Structure formats: structure tokens, C-alpha cells
Length: 508
Image (cartoon, rainbow, N blue to C red; front, side, top):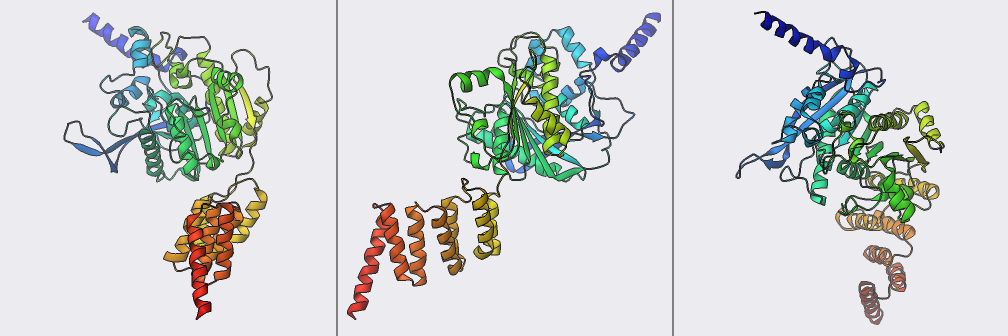
């Protein structure tokens, strides 16, 4: 009986230990002023399907949304890491635990790690106010949001609502390095954004994107095609130089001229050294013109150090996941998280102090061994998007749109305001399908003004003149088109037909 009582007391003491000793805290940096809250939302996307667990079945695509947010201080105890792992068990099926932990830690170390407490309180009440939204894309071999628990808690403590979902392939759990599966991750992130935006504490107008590894590729595509994204942070993602898979450049929405928002890319120093400085390869940072950009070098060879695993005490190398351990990984990861907060504070919250720190850090050439180094490139003010101009022409008419287009042309003389084929297609809608023939003529004129060396633009303008009955102007346009492209068979045929008809009229 005494033994039983003693065991009960020991169990009670073990239960208290995680809340009384600093070494039992997963991360103990100086956090923000908010207590991080956490919720796990289980949603389904009925527009897409996913295997149901048997050969013949299909279910709507499952989306497990991990949500961190600024919360009111609560009497409830923060979660233990094992609580996160239990909630994330579905992400690692059939293993139930991430390979990095089962192979990188001894059984005793893993048990100690599982008992460490985090900062988040599950299902805590939201703090009062509205907060910017950050969506985080996961990477290959780090598919579960468990991989970024610490960064998400840290950001939530600084007044951000952070959401993510596990990385799943299009047709099965395996994620392939192809356009289809990259598009699936982008769509998953878009679904998550749309789902959580109903939360009243979210600032709808402030949206940031974070992407790690493959999630960085997805985040870049999301930033390029969604004008609602205001800032983008990429963590050791293969987007700076060409990736062996051809991604993300092979994605149809990879359009560098649409990448006009502030961007911070944090990556291993060795990649910049090898590709940019030794091989002289061009890169996205150097090509990007609009929006401030930061290139942050981290002195490590370990891809896993850009995830929360940097804080998990992994010592043994795990093939495909975690390289040989080197000292200082936790300090470097703290620096990465702090850079993330400064970046979003500067560009989403518009705070001058973090902006000054970022720009000053770019001038520190002797930051000390093991420190992150920053390269800063100020960007031009971003111009209105093609979508804005096309929408303005359709809704307000070409006469109302012209002054705005001309002002933008003067402000951004080197920029393509509207792609030639987009304007050409719009002109034909006005000419034949929308009954706006007079405006069609002006749209085609605008196209020749923007693209004076385009034979096709003059060909289309000639067709619009011909349709309106202005034969002489049509002839001039077709002649100009042939001058630019002597092989334009359509222009040659049209001129031949016009001259033949003119002869018939004169002979009558």
C-alpha cells in the first residue's frame, strides 16, 4: 500500500514538472505580448475529391486547418508537444510520429521532448481586436504543420493569426514534384484563406504568405496570381535559382511581372555562394523590380534548421530530413523567427521600427560568426495590375480608362501594362460579341500604341476599321502589318480582297 501511495505522489510530481522548470519548456525566447491560442479545424473541399481508404471510394478532399491566434490570457495550461503530436497523428499515417523524431532521437530523449510544454493554449478565447492573416505552406518531408509549431506560436504572440494545413498530393498522400501537385497545394492554401476569413478577428485587407521548401513554391505562385497578398516570406525554398524539377517556373501562373509585393527569402548561404557568386547565375532576387526585397543568408548546411525541428534537440542525422548536427541551430532558428516578425511588422502593420531594423541589418558587414546576413534591395512602387486595367476598360469604358493608362505609362515607362494578347482578345469581344464596336476600335488603337512593332496588333486594328466601313484606314493598317511581317497571309489576303472590291465599285 505504501508503494502505491508513493507511485501516486511521483506521478503527481511528474505532472507538475513541465510547468515548473525552464528546461521543460520547448522554447523560452522573449515572445510578444499575446498568449498564443490554438485550434484544429476539420473542413472538406466539396469541389475536389480524394481516396476514401478503399479502392472504389472517393470522399471530398479533407482539409485539416491548424490555426494559431492572439488569445486572452487563460487559466488553462499551455499544450505539451505531445498534444500537438497527438493531434497531428493523422498527418503521419501510418507512422503516427514524424520520422525525424523516431530516428533522430533516442527513446529517452523523445520521451522528454514529448513532455515539453509549448506556449499555445488550446481553444483559448481570441484577444480583442483584429489581426493580420498569415498562411503557411508546408514542404516535402515536412508535410505536417507540426514542422512549424514554434514559428506559428511566435507570430501569434506578436499579433498575427496564422493558418496552415498538411501537404497532401492531388490523388494520394504522396506529393509529386510536378505542376499538378504544386497547383493542389496552392488551391489548398486558397481554400484555407477563404475558410478562415469568416473569423471576425481577421483583418481582411492584410494578408501575408509564408512558404517552406515546396510550400515556398506554392507561396510564390499564390503571391503572383492573387493581388490580395501583401507580403511573402520564403524559407529555404527552391525559388531563387532554377530548380531541377522545373518548378515553380513551369506553372502557368508563374509570372515574374506580377511579383510586385515585399519579399524576404531566407536560405542557406552555400546556395547563394555556389549559384550566384561562383557560377554567376541570374536569380529571382536580382530580377525583381517592384516591392522591397530581402535576401537573408543563414550559415548552415541543414535544411531542417528552417523548421521547428531546430528546437527539438535532434542530434543524429536522418537521411532526407536532417543533416549532421552543428552547434548554434537553436540560436539561428530564433534569428529566423525574429526576422519573420520584423518583416511582417514592417510591411503588414506598417511599423517603422522593424523596417529600420531590417534595412540597418543589411549594412552590417561584420555581424559575427554564425550570424545571419541580410541583403536589401529597395523596390519601385508597384503599378496597377493588368487585371485592374482590363476591369476598368470593361466596366467604365475605354474613354474613362485611357487617362489612367497614360498616367501609368509615364510613371512606369519600362513596364508592360497590359499584355498584347489580352488587349487583342478584349478588342474582339467589344467588336463582335458585346456590341461595343466604337470602343473596340479604340481598344485596338491602344494596342498598336502599346505594341507598335506588332504586326498582329495592326492586323486586328485593320479588321476593326474594315468592320466600321473605314476602308482607307483599314488599308493603311494592313499595309503596316505587312511591313512589320511580310509573311502575314491574312493581311495580304484582306488587302487583295479590298482592292478587288474597290475595282468592282469603280467599274459600276
